[in-house]
Length: 98
Image (cartoon, rainbow, N blue to C red; front, side, top):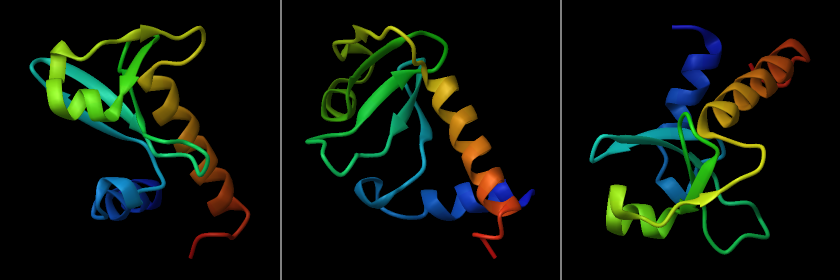
């Protein structure tokens, strides 16, 4: 396990509303990546893994694949994971994680 993987694993041990890194969830054959709640947001968002679509996390947890997804112009779940890993790697390189 890499240091980046260990950081993501430790973050997933927290309750969902306390996490700071995106994480994947699969329900009803659909995989989404949950974007942690921003400080200004009312709820988290669930982005489809390979498609530029999202829904509210509350809708996802209540309805799974039947959640109402909306198009998103430039983000999919895979993008969220890649960007978060790149950000953590940069912070490790800068000595911000020990």
